Image (cartoon, rainbow, N blue to C red; front, side, top):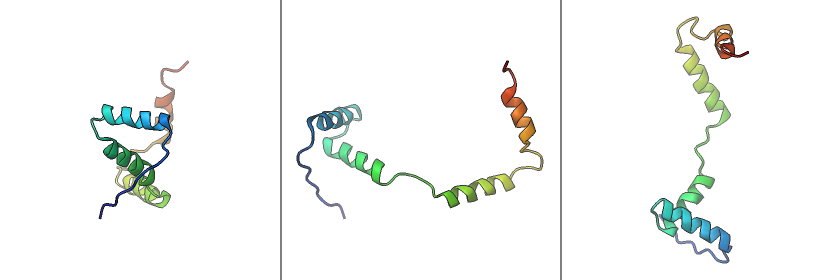
Length: 81
């Protein structure tokens, strides 16, 4: 259930930046503040274990020989002096 929050003593610079961002994104000050808080407090980070599990699953789905470190290194160096 949504809750009301009142902010006091917001520095002028922060207020002006929030106001500018709200205008740029065509949001109200309230909506922009919520988006800012959500971005900081609920980042879309993946736990290291989950990231590793996803990488392993992707690797097992590759055809044998598709991941050739030497070939990738050669391609990265291609065109470099």
